[in-house]
Each structure stands twice: as C-alpha cells, then as structure tokens.
Image 1 (cartoon, protein in one colour):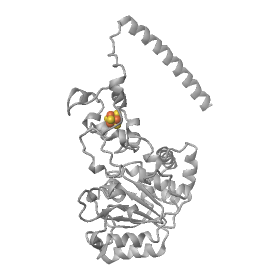
Image 2 (cartoon, helix red, strand yellow):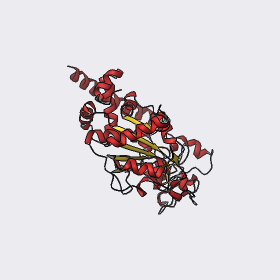
Image 3 (cartoon, helix red, strand yellow):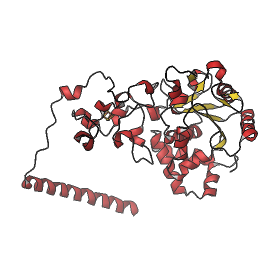
Image 4 (cartoon, helix red, strand yellow):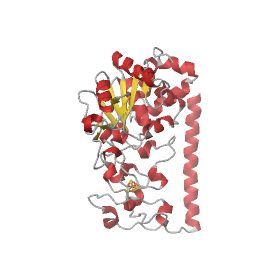
Length: 361
Ligand code: SF4
C-alpha cells in the first residue's frame, strides 16, 4: 500500500463496495454519537484523506490491546481504516526486526506529523531501566517520539493510569503517558483491554474533523466515556425492581437479574459497552453474567472486584413499592387484547406498506 493513495483509492484496490463503505461511515457516525447527516461528511473526508503515519509504542503491558486490535471483526472496511493508517512502527506485529525496525521509527520521527498510539505503562524508577527496547528505555523512546508527533492516543488501562504494573508497591514506578508528557494533544481510550471500535471512531473523527474528539476531565472522549454504564444497562430494570443476584448460579442469576450485589461497578463506571458491546456487537461482560469491573476508571484494579461499590443509596429496593407479580390473564381477556393488538399491527403494517409503495413509485 502506498502512503500517497487516498482512502478511496485503497477501497477500490481492495474491492470494498461503495455500499459497505457507506455502511461503515454510518456506524462510525453512530459510535461518535453524531447526527446521521454527518455520515456524508465522514464519507467525503475518508475518500480524500491521505494515510496518516502511525507509530504504535508498546511498553509495560500484556499486549491485550494489540490482541484486541488483531481480533477486531467489525466490517472489513473498519479493519481497512486501521490498516490504511501507515503503521510505520509496531513492536509486536511489524515485519522488520532489529536495526531495520529502529530505522523505521527514526525515519518517521524525523519526518514528524504522525499519530502516536501508546499501549502499556512507562516505568520511571532508576532511569526507566525496567523496560528497554533496542537498548533504550521506554521513557527515552516515549519522550523522543512525543516531541515530533501531531497527537497521542493512549490505549488501555496501563497507558492511561499505569494499569496493573502500577499496583502498590509499584516497584518499577509505572506511570501513564499523561503523567510524563505535556504540551501534546492526548486522548485516552482506557479499558482492559481497549474496545477497538472506539479507536477506529477516534481515528475517523481525527481524519474527518482534523482534530481529536471532545474529552472529559480525564482526557477520555465523551462519545465513548460520557455515559454511565448503569444508566444504559439492560439489567437496570431489575435494579430498580430490587431484583438482585445473591449468589453465582442462583435463580436470579439464571433470570438475568442485577449484578450489583455481586460487585458490579456499573453505577460508577463510564463507557459505551452496553451500546457497542464486543465481538462484533454480540455481547459484553454484564450480558454474559459477570459484573462490570469499571476497567476504564483510574486505578480500577484497586477496587475489590466482588464487593458492592458504595453508592449514595440503594433507593429503589427500599423506597419503591414492590413490583407486582404478573397476574395470570383469563383466556377471554387475553383474546380481546390479542385481537386489539392484531388490528393495530394490521393497520400499522398496511400504512408501512403503502408508504413503501409510495417511495418506490
Ligand atoms: Fe447493570 Fe450492574 Fe447497574 Fe445492575 S448494577 S443495573 S448489572 S450496571
């Protein structure tokens, strides 16, 4: 792939249809919480944008965010948008090794204006000797790369707040990027691991609007971290009704009740997991039966995973009247309601069909 090709040219080469491309742009507008009219703007921008050079630095981490990137299975064009970034340097997945790899990095840094993605924390104790690549410390590499970059995107919990390497007593002095680098636009995409859809959307925003998305006071984009998980959770109705799982595998667990008492951190966690989910939008931890661990919150690893998080009051179960159990209907009532619903559905269907027919005309 040539860095001088536009994204539209890349699409043509790869046989991506116009329909697939526009579908991708619509999904991105949705993830970015933009009005649907912005789809055309995203499409126009991606069609003309040149591939921005990207340096992906990986320091103290488990490589989970890279794994998340490699296993992303969204529409092929999403992979393409990440693919067509000119990924000049990525220690884990790049083909060159040794001096050739280091030369790639040096050449990109010399040119400047690239995007930097950082995965993993940076140890600062003892001059950063606890994480060295090519004989240089992570600290030294990060400072050098940050000096000439257009912007930094941190991915995962470790590059955000130090992550697991920073758990007390933090022997290596692990830190997140924002504790070390200043004077460069930084956007944080925490999570353990990163949800790649949020990275794709951030890149699309950058290419479309020529700037990073609006962020909260922790530097996290509002489109992805502006909503409380608890307020968008499919189990919220059970929380409000006072229906809680009390033990793993109990009747409430089998019925999909609220996981608050099992330690779910949804009431204090902010991320768009309930909306965009994981694995091609199929599921997310709470849907799978495990509480949220608030992996996008600073120092989340210090919250006891299976203890309920303190919230100001568990108001619904104590102040709301109990939810009435569903009463059985008599066959006659059920028949009347069924007939009414049937008529309503029939009318709605007829209206929809006639609208469609008009549209087609
Ligand atoms: Fe969902 Fe957790 Fe809130 Fe219960 S406590 S409604 S499981 S986010």
